[in-house]
Image (spheres, helix red, strand yellow):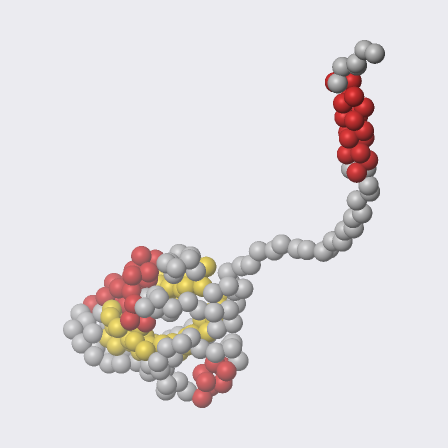
Length: 210
């Protein structure tokens, strides 16, 4: 009797193996899903509010000091911010600012009762600084314009240490002006009108600059 080639016996076995593998992969895979709906993405903003009562220093004489005035600024933003301030002359003789010395302190301990009452309604708390911390003490001309303000009147950086202002936090300042005893008599009966401009910006990483 003639023997059949062995390879013919392997063909049915190979087919059966393939069929078994195919059958094993044919089972249904159950699944389920759920979703988290209504997600939103929004941006914050930078917003500050400053005193709305102007300061008036009247009748200054050479060597004389005017009664102290007070101003405040609050962070109404949604994020911590850094701030600086500068003075802008809007009317009058700007040269007078070279003879007017400005002594500005942060969180003064001696502000009057009405200022204290006002402060209590301004925000959560004052910026973290010792009472009466010196901010600026030089002629008014030294803080005219943006560049001078950035260099000398970073309102929340007493002693040059950057300190961001948190949302709803406020700063209260005492301002004392003194007229130089050597002011020329050509400045008699002169007036200069100024704005104090506060500029706030988002804290830029670790640099605290903007």
